[in-house]
Length: 377
Image (cartoon, rainbow, N blue to C red; front, side, top):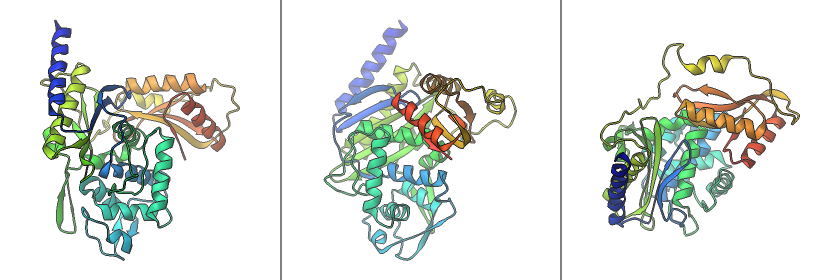
């Protein structure tokens, strides 16, 4: 009987989504496993509009992680950045903005001028150079149908992506840089005496929503990436080309409800984790001992040498998912990965203490076996 009720629930939710028929592509997936729970036209090319800024922020977070930038650094605004079309903060040429404020301006207000500021400061003073880097990195992390021509998503006929690629990019942000995920969940932000409200309505209307980004141009229409966590599951919904803001929010809501229903999470009785992912202030955490124990002897013969470099192979909201990933890493590379809980409460799977060459070899081996990872220093 439960299976029948679950099927009927999913069926009616599906009908509700299909009857809207006022969008170009949709997808909902489990962030931890990558499993797609429902999709329509997910591999068809679309204009990503300001969802582009997810990649701009991904590269900003990478610069922070490798200390090429710091949150309290100041960035100079060029004439080109100041001339960006709305939406923008309206920064004057020659003025400065702090990196953390720039991140919030892009994540909350989707400011095109600030996206250009980040692009120019990160890649040789030219947005075109930064766009080339965006596309190259997109290909490296598995986005097969994406081409970026600018940092903001302003109209360009060659600036294209898909719902699948946008979902993969969003997952990469969550897994590679979980310490910065909080910026996508900011509901409002005040700067220069003015308060800006996040266009993602689900942050206030959908319990458990913790991100992520909206987009709009005349060609792209209204788009949204929305993420939500309930009962130990973390889902992502992508809606591209909706007719208006109401449809965008409504379809994303239905997609997330459908996804949770498919995973057996009730839409009326569920638990929502604290959005801060605060680490408990006690020593009962099962990770604490594991993370500080002596590292087990390596079980491979690939000529590993040791140092201060590591490889991160994902970050997960549940310990079980992290354990499963660690097993995959061991099977693929022969290397034991540590599971470490960071300040946001996410479980990071990391191979620690390698030399630069050994870390690169481990990354390449893991990637060849379908494990999404990156080298950190």
